[in-house]
Amino acid sequence: PVPLFVHVGGTIRMLNPAAVRLFQVADAGQMIGRAAFDPLHPDDRETARARSRAAIATGVRQPPLAMRYVLPNSRTIDVEFSSEPFNLDGEPAVLTSARDISGEMSAKRRRERTNQLYAALSAVNQAVVRATDYAALCEQVCRIAVEIGGMKCALVRRFDAERGVLVPVSF
Image 1 (cartoon, rainbow, N blue to C red):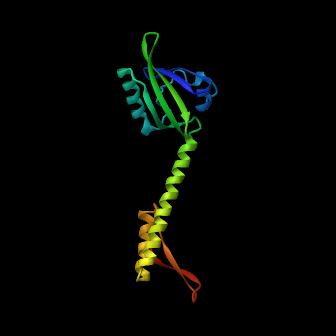
Image 2 (spheres, helix red, strand yellow):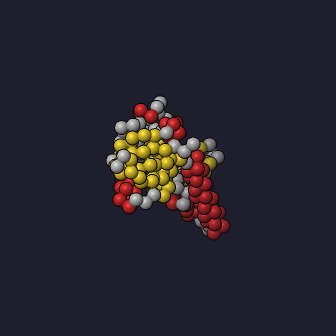
Image 3 (cartoon, rainbow, N blue to C red):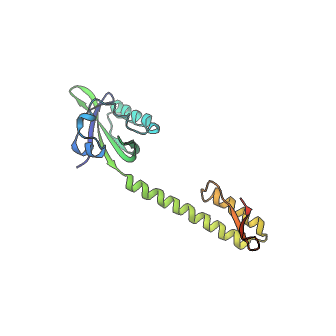
């Protein structure tokens, strides 16, 4: 079953059992009467409000959009919401369907991160092939790790056999 809920004027009026499960509340009563947008991540609330206003103003269904939903345990999940305007007892209302896309978004982030690391590895390989100076290569590897690889910082060390320690070469 698809998680569905109805809100009127931004207040949740009803939701189905699938929505109760998705939003991880004990029963529908915990959601009915609450502000529909409060459980969304703060960065997504205004977008959701604007979509709801647009749906009501135009009478047009809003296409699916991914947003972050904050569960009662404070964990955030990725949810795709679609909104359909209608009248409920003469009042403008919005029927919203929700779909947990956390797994898909996590896989997408992993793919993007893997691609970023492969791009950094490729750039390092190119730098090694073109290198003429060891110190300059080490500096370039650190720059690549940060700028292309998305690392917060990078450090290249070499082993000093006489002292038995790692010595910084570039960072």
